[in-house]
Image (cartoon, rainbow, N blue to C red; front, top):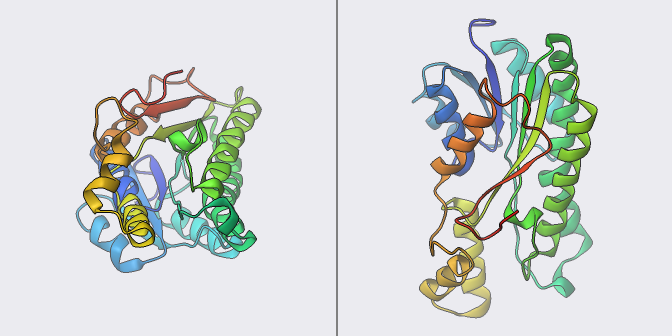
Length: 254
């Protein structure tokens, strides 16, 4: 398979936005490597795609990232498109957000993207082409209550995106952030469940609060995020780099 198709590596690809991106890029003709912590979930997605492989990877573990990257390259060649999608979003009041939670959120949402970007950059520079897309969040652009660790990590991820875009601007590499609003994913479902458990509010009431800031009054669909990623990694976006592109129904306007 190596060298036959452009190779895209997607983290957090076993469900939600990551799985939707994998499906969309496979439709666009990419060989896709799905990365995540659970082999069975990755395989359930990969088995539906024409040219796909799976690597078990914990983006909070440096050695796991290195091994997973090497395995991906062995399967389909150097990574031309990296989508840093893996993330966690625990909810807690600031006073109940301990240092262990902050470090875990930073490790998954920021450090994993940092380390994987470092891993793929040498081959991208050698090829004179590459695309890095960091799945951030509207939380990279605005604050939300009870998610101080997540907001901090996503703001930092956007800073990394912009700094790396400047360093790679003359190398044929683009680095961008996609910032979805609340999206219909397991991560959001877990966040809603957590609020219900902590507050005793009805699930429908909590869901309304999640969609209240979206002028369209709805959750974003994972496929809408995937469509924007597919555009960013296509052939007509060489001048688009260092950007935070929002998919949120008008919640955030630049």
